[in-house]
Each structure stands twice: as structure tokens, then as C-alpha cells.
Image (cartoon, rainbow, N blue to C red; front, side, top):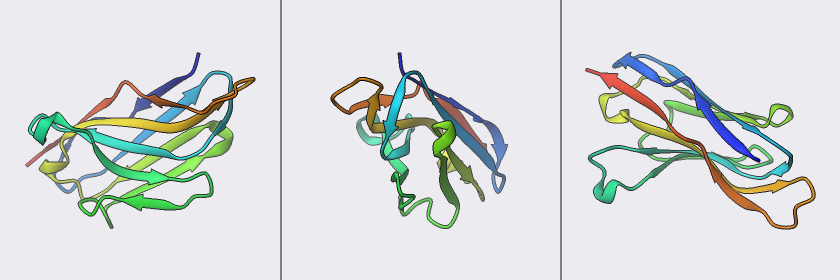
Length: 125
């Protein structure tokens, strides 16, 4: 069974840094794009917002609100993605979720999406 497990969340003061990790485990054959989303209680409709995304060939995309502050990376050998977050602001407070919408398990025929359980990031002012 495939699992995505996030770690690295916590409480930090504004201006500080945190690094989130997301490790995918199980009988994995291939993972295409991976990404980080966040969900804040005050978000309209409580929707998850795309924060950053990285393709299998390391092409990256960032939300405008985190450009030049956050960096996404991945280690394909470890099936792990990272989110380095610098210059954190109180508005970055949210539950951060790891995602892949295209993961192929060993012996599988179709790509499937997976989500992690989320990790809380709280930035105090």
C-alpha cells in the first residue's frame, strides 16, 4: 500500500524558516509530478491552495504568494520531495499537504493520485 508521509511542520516566528519533507513508500514503480498544497481555516470554501509543484524532470511551479521564498525539490532515489520555506509570514499558517496525481505502483496499469495526511505550519507574528 502506498503512503505519503509529511514531516517537518511546526511553530516558527515570522521571518523564520522550516523545511517540510514528504516520503512516498510502498511498491512504487514511478512518480511523475509531486506537489505541496496548503489549507488554511479561513480559505474560501476551505479549499486547498497549490503552493509548489515539481515535475519528474525537475521543472518547478510556484504560487505567486510564495515565489522567491519557497523552494521545492525532490530526490527520486528516495521518492521524497522537500519544501524549503524561508521568510515565513503569518499568512503562511496552514496545514500543508503533499500530493502526487500520477503514481504508478509496481505491476499497476494506471496512474493514481495520492495525498499525505498533512502537517501543520504555524507562523507567529
